Amino acid sequence: MLRACRLSPAIASHRPLATLENDMNRKVRTKPAATASGMPEPTDGPAGDLPEFLRAADLGKKEGARGSITFLGKTASKIESQFGVQYAFPVRFKGKLYDWPIRIDSGNHRRIADRFGKRTPKGSVNVELKTYNRNLYIAIV
Image (cartoon, rainbow, N blue to C red; front, side, top):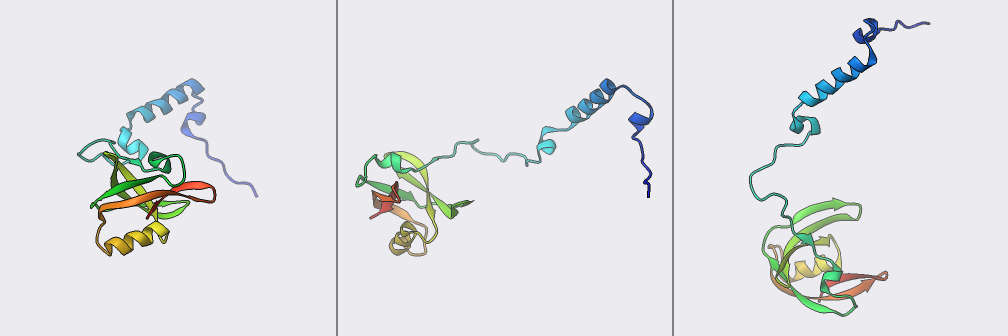
């Protein structure tokens, strides 16, 4: 069974290929950038000044290094990644602002729940570098 085939108007009129490319480029240039990318318009406020994630290397290089981290009492942002659900808490360490991601049902999550209960964490906690599977991590002590 044969199907009927429709030719586009450009092919049917035998227009040169260079003209077709110019027509395509004109269409792309006329679209506004916001709708072409599908991104929403930016909101008012500071642009892109997000704090870094707190890493074990920020605390030290060897297991057993100790420090104190201050929770700022602000709500945590939810992060869904290949490592599972985490909440990034805004913290201050050595005078610098960080986001400290804490995995759900981890030891740190349980210690935060024990210390602060159901309210948003605010205050200082002592931390120490520990090793799990030959990787350093920050643990609340």
